[in-house]
Length: 212
Image (cartoon, rainbow, N blue to C red):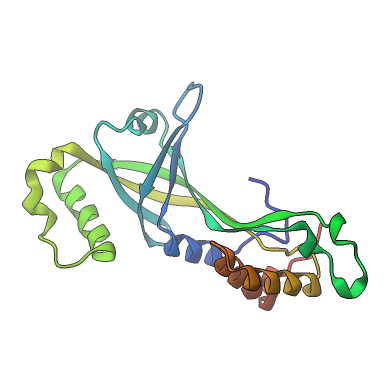
C-alpha cells in the first residue's frame, strides 16, 4: 500500500493497533494463481513477531500456503469520511465548496512466514491461547478432541510491519484541529476513533514527519 511519510506509523504504533483489532484478512498468493486466497479471520498477536490462529480444514487457503508460505495479515479500521467543507478554515476565508474530501483510516499489513500446525498438542496450544484472550469459564479444548481433526493451526512469524495512519498529517495543526472538532460534532460511526488517532498523532512528534 502507498504510505506517505506523514502517514507512516512506527512498528510500536502499528502493533498496538493490531492488538486492539485482532480480526483481519489473511492473504496467501500461492504460486501461479490468478488471484490470491483471502480469508477473513480472528487471530491472536502473542508478541511482536508471532500470530496464532486456526481455520477449518476445508478452507481453500491451505493449498496456497503449502505452495508459498509467504503471507500477509491485513488489518484496517477506525475510518471516517472527512467532508470537503471541513478542509476549509472559516477564519482564513477559504471557500468550503473547494475543499477536497478524503477518508481517514488506519491500516496495518504484516508480512509473515506461515507454518501449518497439524499435531494435536500444537493445535490445542493455539486454541488455549486464543480462548485465554477471548473467552472464560469454558472447558479445556481437549474436551473437544473429536473435533480437532477438523481444524488446522497456523503460526505466523512477522517479518515486516507496514503501518499507515492517514489522519491529516499532510496539513497543518489548525486544519487538523478543525477536522477534529467536526468529527466530534458529527459523532457518526468511526468518528470518535478517527478523532482520537488524529489528536494522538498530533501530540506525538514521531508522527509529525515532514512532507516529502
